[in-house]
Image 1 (cartoon, rainbow, N blue to C red):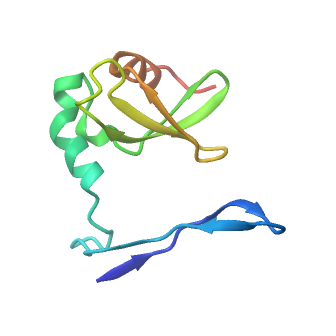
Image 2: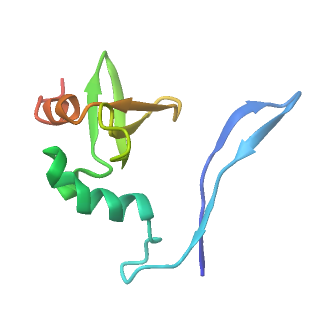
Length: 106
């Protein structure tokens, strides 16, 4: 069993804040097992992405995003990504994400 530290979010000292951390089974490389990563690696090729694209970042609309999951039950917007600035989650089409990943960052 292992614990991976997270971050503080929604800090408002008057009303409280959120603390995030993960507890899980350590992999041989020391990282925690991620169901989202394992599912992404299996499903990515069927959506035109590479298994190694999990966790990659891309830029769109002047903001940076990180790929966090794939959900085949959302056929129109199967890719989940988080905005790096604030961690807010977004959904996107696989085609758009593939195009963003192949666009050089400025």
